[in-house]
Length: 171
Image 1 (tube, rainbow, N blue to C red):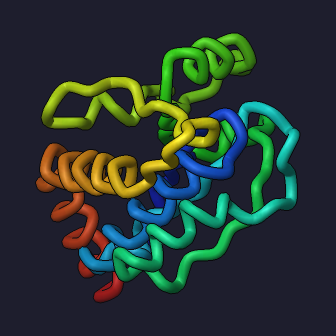
Image 2 (tube, helix red, strand yellow):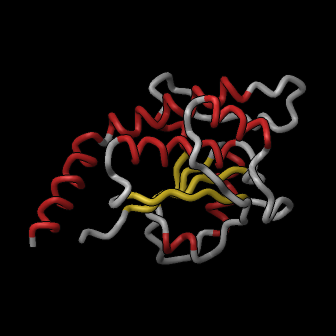
């Protein structure tokens, strides 16, 4: 069987943005029947919230959108993550700056902004944690738009992965 492709979503505390991105990506790969080919996780830049569940407002919105099988405990990114994951997708430029500063030599992980995949060109995914009106609905819709575009951009790639898995199963 082909080795899984691995994606790590990163934000500051691993309570809002990266868990939502992880949940949406996980939901998309399941809907496409690619859970045997892809793995997704999320982590934080800082370690303040290690072991905590995602923000309750994030979880409420995720469940309202029909994603009911998601659970997560916050964790901090590690050096090993740069070797384990193929892509590390950050939410904003301060995340990118930190990731590039801690990236070990000889790693093949591709560090990018998740917003790079936004068809509307919005590169930064703002942190909603401290916003007076915590509007996670907007954020979740952004993530769905990004993930749909990731799938669209890489449609032939996803299709080839599926075909390769079917070929492997016949061997």
